[in-house]
Image (cartoon, rainbow, N blue to C red):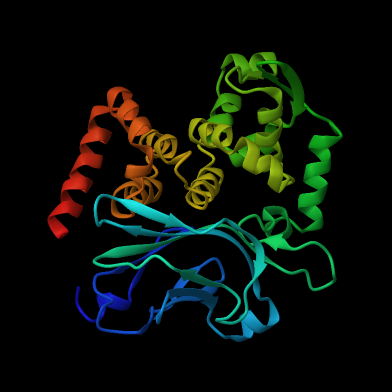
Amino acid sequence: MTTDNAYRVDTTSRLAQWRIDNLASCTYRKSDPFKIGKWNWRLVIEKNRNLYIKLYPEISGLTKETPPIASFIIRVVSSLGGRKALVHPEIRDKQLKTSDDFVWALEVPLTGKFIIDLEFLDLKTASTNGGESCSVWTEGLTQKDLRSTAISSLGKMLSESIHTDIIIHASDGSMGAHRAVLAARSPVFQSMFSHDLKEKEMSAINISDMSIEACQAFLSYIYGNIEEQDFLVHRLHLLRAADKYDVVDLKEACHESLLEDIDTNNVLERLQIASLYRLEKLKICCMQYLVRFGKIFDILEEFDAFIKTADRELIAEVFNEILSVWKGF
């Protein structure tokens, strides 16, 4: 490891890893800054009688005004004698301001190479008006982008079924909508209404591959009044609908959202979704999470099932990534 690399922390959306090749010659090491959420972070190792690991945000105007409230899991993974991990008890909603706010003392001596693995479960900012803290990863789609009176009125047209002129039939229910709005937001809908197709003649669209709740979320996005929680709950259905009806901004919103909470429980599903819907950033992040960040070792049984059923080309890409990483060691 070069001198520069000795301080570098590798990151993905919520995961950071600091690789330590040799600590015998020093008693103190501070990482380069790395960004997760809104803040730049530092990891520090102090070697005395015990080994101390510290995590804190860099001092800045943002940190002083809105110090992060962090939930995270931190591990030390050693390759000595097999891949062994020391895991700190999960931290929940801890406000971090200084280098003394989180200190982990390891009484077990570490030799050889090891990795400090830091996975953020959530990051929040305290409310300035005394309300509840707000996660930086779920800050409002509606609050940021959908504030205008015109958009609110458009949403009201849907929610109150004002002068609807077409019926949407989902798998377990129906609701009214407006041809003009659908056509303006989707070239597929526009084509349906512009040509002599059955949808134009019957004033109805069958979306049988979506439940009524998912369909309502889809239409709410199109009309601009979707709630953040509905977006998160239905985002896989929304992604499929966005791809099917060519709603480009919705597909990108789902893509960005799926990048933000990759973990061992969903990474293989996300990888297949990325391949199916041609989401290149998501595919790269999933493969990095599995291979470069070593999370494949945590889900070997699930990965074995994955390689038996997944697309052959996708499996080949994963193994090419594995070979590429191994060549680097």
